[in-house]
Image (tube, rainbow, N blue to C red; front, top):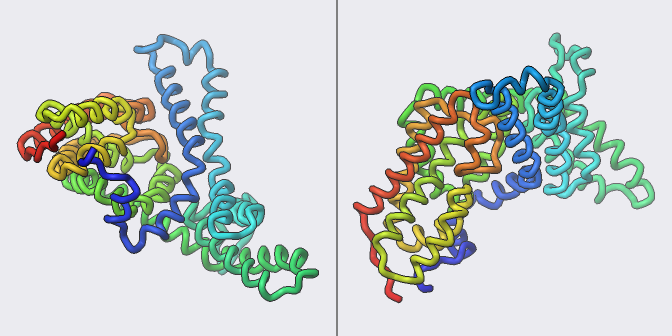
Length: 363
């Protein structure tokens, strides 16, 4: 099938200079996706069970059940920093146990009892940003001691010196720095979405697919985590999800216009998984190789993103699931708005692609 573009080839073509560094950053969080998905879906189920107009008085009659499910759904956030510390150490070539220890130091409740420079320390300040900074430094220090210390002493002195030195730098400098960065990210993203409305939503959703091709989208992963840690919800992810929704409308337009039997089969096979939020088959098998449909998909996603931003739709998860399943994780009172934005993004992607047209590939 001549129109198809291998995923690796496409990503290599559009690869950005920073994509390798951002991919390493994303590798810290990718192993956590199953936990995020479970947490989000459980929270979504709880939200449904609390709705008397849908399930009656379940919440009244089974409070212990909902309480347990709440624990199941929120458990990942109780150990989030530890998990990030362990994974960061693995990615940067350090001892995973020490990575978890560094995260544990930053999260220790006993920090609140300690005063430094006239101010009480704040347990967990900086969230995952502080953990990333501290554990990255820890890995570098640990590697230096591996080179400097003789083998007989390295096993004993390296963990000791690495922990003490990194811990001191973390408390004095890196955790406050991480706190400032974390606050700037959380407040900045929320401010942009709250104040920007249609425009910010359109720009974010409309440019997300090109970011995916360059690999720069991986830099957004810590932002998703920070938003949930800071606010308890994520208003950014539903906006970006509209980018994939625009692909569906574009693919349907191609399906209706093309006379190429093979292309029709590709689209019919890719649409079901596209509805579930898995967009790679549509991107690399349909819209990107054809050119103009990819633009139509981006424009359709921009329309959906503008509406999602304007309606203040948010999810309770960081990232992981997208498409129609994401509706299960949308905050109470915004599910219908998400589904309406989804439908409009599909229609917009269809219309833009239909109007732009494309060169129908020969058999």
